[in-house]
Length: 215
Ligand code: G3P
Image (cartoon, rainbow, N blue to C red):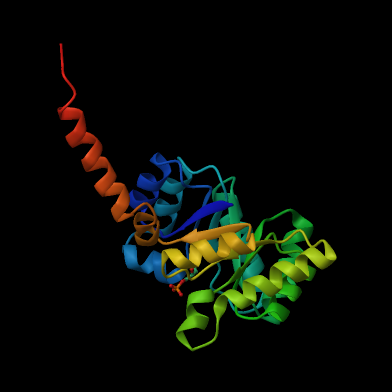
């Protein structure tokens, strides 16, 4: 299972990278806006130490505009994956990107049928947003489960990125399904290491160690 970090915060990515937990990074316009920094500068900084795919999103709504952006963003760094929204225009752009050898990540996916379209267009990655589905009372993880089954049925090579992760249980459930990738917000990654029995266990070992006779 690969871990991508879902943020445009360079320090958070660096911290996770130093812990050996970064196989790639996903950004989106909202995450970039949150940092209040120049996009290109942020991307160059991330790419200086992350060698896995870095998702960079287009903002055009027509295929021609998306392609222009995709080619430009792809020229910025060696490991770009161009994030393209799930629309017919987006799928047209994904197809051309696939033909040109540009990696793509089809985003804003909320149903297995949309995931099928992304795979047929030749997407490198597909990103179902599970948290946003949970938010409206639909079980987001069911989309991951169905998509994984469908891709296996047909041997689609598109990799599933479980996106819009809200808490550690999402990561656990994604792993049980066997999703290729979870893109994890830094705060969720932080929580994954915690267990009260680990803390109690460390304290007990250290306390007991003090009782060991020293020469
Ligand atoms: O990067 C896309 C996705 O992970 C966004 O998540 O929390 O805005 O629904 P969220």
